[in-house]
Amino acid sequence: MSLKSGIYSARSYLTILIGFLIGFAIVLWVERQMPTRVETTDGIVLSKSFPPLPQQRDLTFDEAVWARIAWQYFVNNTQANGLVNAEANKPWFSLWSTGSYLLAAIAAKQLAIISDAEFDDRIASALDALGTLPLKPDGLPAAFYQAELLEPLPSASQNAGSAIDMGRLLMPLQILLWRYPQHAAAVSRLLSRWQLDALLQSSGPQGASLPVNRWVIRSDDPRGTYGYRLYAGSVLRLINAAAGLAVSQPPDGLKLVEIDGHAVPDEGLRTPWGKQPSLISMPYLLTGLEQGFDARSGEITWRIMQIVQNRTGTPAGAGQINSDYAEQTPDFVGALPGSQPLPIQNLNDDASGTLASRALTSTRSAFAWYALFRNRWSEALRREMLPMIEPGKGWKAGFNADGSVNADIDADTNAMVLESLSYIAHGQLLCLGCLATPLPAKPPQQQGVTSK
Image (cartoon, rainbow, N blue to C red; front, side, top):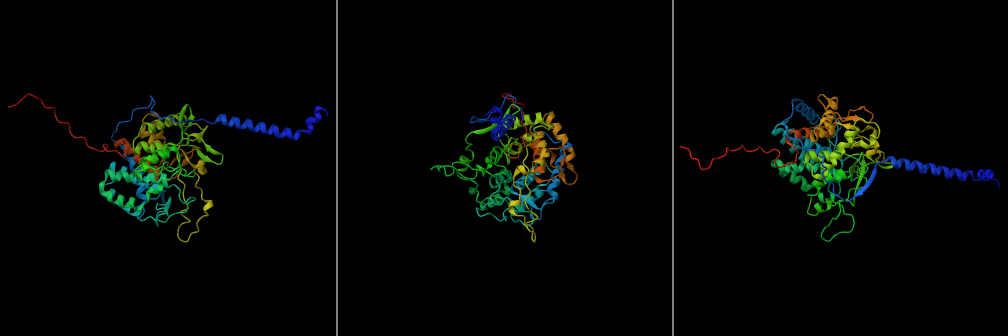
């Protein structure tokens, strides 16, 4: 048999082999385009380039106006029961958005936007309404509620968002306990109604001295990334005696992804093709605004800022610098009386499903960068957000990846604007000495000198 006839007879096998080699080459090329992933058990420490934290100062006239614009959202969307819509004119809320509302109210009081009487009335009404929420069988609130009827809304997972979202809500409750003792009794009653122990799940063998030796976040939790665990863990660790050990137990090696020479936690978006590299800045920014940075959260935030600063306005690799989680709207219309709810399989709870509609440059992140790291870049980023003002309604979400305006107006965006401006004037929200009035200095006394 000649070589030509042999090749002709084996053409089908050669086609398969060539196709395999081409596919293998494509996989190698894609892998080389992806950021390098590394795993480390070493701690994250502050770099020498970490900038000094900005000093507190009074708000400018424009900043005071921006704060009042943000608060107008909550004025417009407050329900008769005292809770606030998660989105403008859409009667639903989540535990996360309720935490945003309570933090916005605290910031508004500190900025003297609302009086003490209005603050106390709003907080008391919200706590009373939270105390009447129907609970899940495990004794915890549901992920989403209809805002007018206070009824749970359908969700793809009945346990959706329980730990991370509850951590967001517990943050302002902790601030109320520390700073506003007039609401301490109401907060205590509310917490006693919820079975917070159910937030802690065990993984691995049980220890005799530690009932829960590992804190587990469900694999389908859209906020179950390292940054959100770090943010919520600071509050969840106070649940009971075992919680501190369980929540602070780190994963088996921190997975980092290297982008533009900076190693940051690998917190990629979940897609049908696996986790795609993406920065998530929101939990770190919230940590700085509300709790104040520690060395770990501060350094990660600083690295993320350098990456985002280098890539701002660059269309290439846009998915890698999308840094905000988009709250998924539940089927609140289908849950109204007389309406037919959507089939549960049709609800989209996947954070990656709305990538095209999520803000690449968000208003809330721009204000947070402006408050935490004040430089020419953050000032310019904040100026870009001025078109996001919707007079009489609040701040829009920001810009989409294609440069168009994301016109959504929601509680999270306007709360973060208020928190950022409050940080500029008064520092972090959870702080023992930030609002304390220093005592006037006494004139030095001269010893050994008497006057007649």
